[in-house]
Amino acid sequence: MEQIELDLGVPIDESKLDPNPMVNVYGYGPESKRCKHCKHLFARRYAGTYYKCGLRQNTNGAATDQRVNWKACSQFVDTLLIKQFNAVLPADTKEC
Image (cartoon, rainbow, N blue to C red; front, top):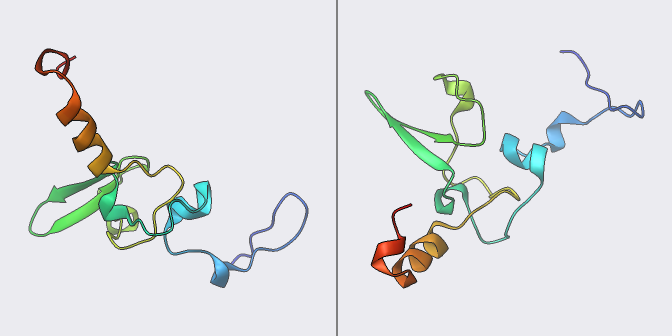
């Protein structure tokens, strides 16, 4: 396996990377939130259900599957807040 190095020449210990690749790119989000609570998560249904993140490139393969119980990244957008916001809007402004 090839060792990855930062620009500073310091090697990265891959065993300490989070399994969620979005956390490794953007950092951790809210402590108590998981990917399943995020608006960016969507499902692809074939013979099974495969969850994907809208912020990642989708290769239609297992490598880009997103686990619903992974810790949320800093790009997290709560689906509950979106539902509450839409409920408060007047009916004529919901469709843009």
